Image 1 (tube, rainbow, N blue to C red):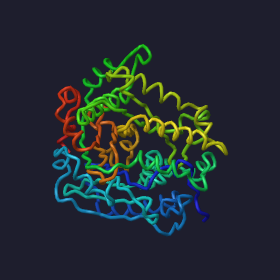
Image 2: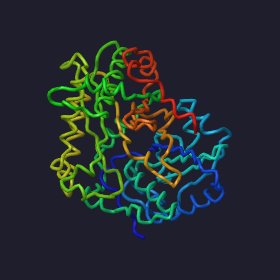
Image 3: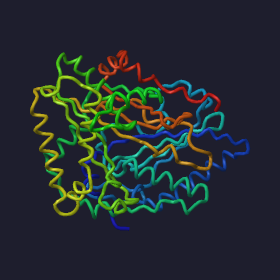
Image 4: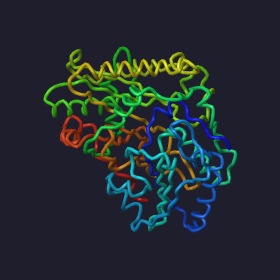
Amino acid sequence: MEPKKLCLFDQLTPSTYPEVVIFYSMNDPNLDLDKTLIQLKKSLSETLTLFYPLSGKTKNNLYIEDYDTGVPYWEAKVNCRMSDYLQLRETESLNKFVAIHPFTKEKDNSDPQLAIQVNVFSCGGIALGVSLNHKQLDGETLSYFLKSWAALFTGSPHKVVIPQLSKAASFFLPQTELPPNCVALMDQLWFKKSNYVTKRFYFNNKAISTLKSLGKSETVPSPTRNDVVSCFIWKHATEASWAISGKPRISVAAHAVNMRPRMKNPRSLENCTGNLFWWASIIVNPAQKAELELSQLVALTNEIVSEFNGDYLESMVGEAGFEPISDFVTQLESMMGMDSEKPDIFAFTNWKNTFNVVDFGWGNPVWVGAHGKVGPEFRNMVVLIDSQGSNDKEVEAFVTLEDRQMAILESDSQFLAFAGNGHNINSSL
């Protein structure tokens, strides 16, 4: 098979490993665990035949080849019941359920594209730990893969997502060589050496309803859950940073925007694999805005994200597609040069209806976890996940911040009035 070209956005995305851990209670007394594990491995192999670039290696930030490399696969026993583990309500141990440490700056082109760890609890429950190399996969691509794996496991080939493996590179043309300033900026956006801490916060329906009331305005009369929760976290994380520095400084919220449904023809990128997202960067300059009002942050975020429309995305297609990226780089370089101190950058991504609907015939997951402690070089980041409780309008946020910022956030009474310290997952598992 021919090498698979990376698309432009793959080239701009570093090799680092997000993780997702999906917990299934397996409440079936007739389940044959040994047969289940054999079938999981067999159907995984079948799925990799469809998504064959995931078995390869990255070469020169241009393409994927060597498809015989394969995907690391482990099975691990967990010496406790799933219900006991979930009641701990902590995040650090999530890293034990995956094969590769999350969000570490990787430099080796031989790193795998994907790694799977199947964790079996003493009660028979299973947690699927997935590490994905961001160089080739975004969250949407991983969801295609997992849904296809589940479909083949359950003998439902009609539910398999037929991946469009090469289409992204034909739309968003790769560069033979990225400009050095572009490479440097992307590295700066993704990685900053510090001591990071990840905590899980829970926003129940009452908190979200109140935040929606506080976040609405004439321009955004009906803000979404994602709007208010992300801006609320951004507001308080920024205030924590300002408290540490002793003065306000520029703050940037970088939202990962899925480009697929925003194209002029939403079906043009249907089932396309690759990093088909880009960053909507919302900038608050304290020289222009002294107060961080939630409604203003929501309005500003909606304004910037709405610019990711069909016309803007079409401007990135074809031979001239790098020009908007170059403009983006120039804008951020200019912004970063406005202040003697580096700006605070907070990245946001939303896993709404992504991994909580992957069904291997065991029912929907009882919980979806993001990650524990990240590597020493990463960044401030927030992952929003639909809560697996009785009310699917509730949200869990995995918040990664520098340790001093997190300490202030966890003592911020105005923040904690809305953000609980982890959702108490159903104890009847």
